[in-house]
Length: 183
Image 1 (spheres, rainbow, N blue to C red):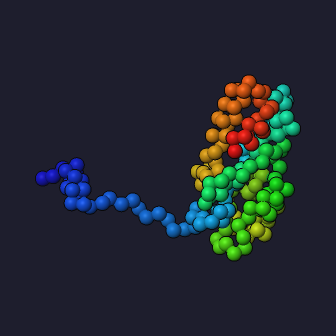
Image 2 (cartoon, rainbow, N blue to C red; image 1 turned 135 degrees about the vertical axis):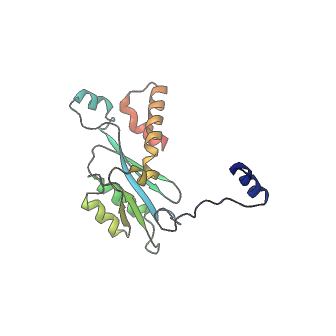
């Protein structure tokens, strides 16, 4: 009687192939054109704190405390902006949509975002994307993996900013310049 390992060898010898399960055919991350499918998220360098010295030390030269990232599912291009507050970036998103939005002839446009107050729970942000023809697909609570294409770069950005600033012996206040240089 053949063992499991022997049976696998016999199957491979006979030319049998092991197949992965078929990938989903849903349009969740199946963009076929640039900016047809996007995801958006905030990243924070410093959040509000009782330690005002820490906030002052880590804020950018012009008061920046956070950044917003938009990632295209088709090309993996990252679009960015360093911001002074966690307030919804309505003005920046309006400009971005005017210049980068997939055209009206593109079917199945979608945007993924978490339900954070600055994006997913802001009616003005939702209206912007709806008017541009995007279906808004919020992620489930505590499920950052559902928005992974834009969540993953946060770690790389943070590590790169720290490396650039420490390598150049620059103060933390220069983080927006390192951020833009990295992207």
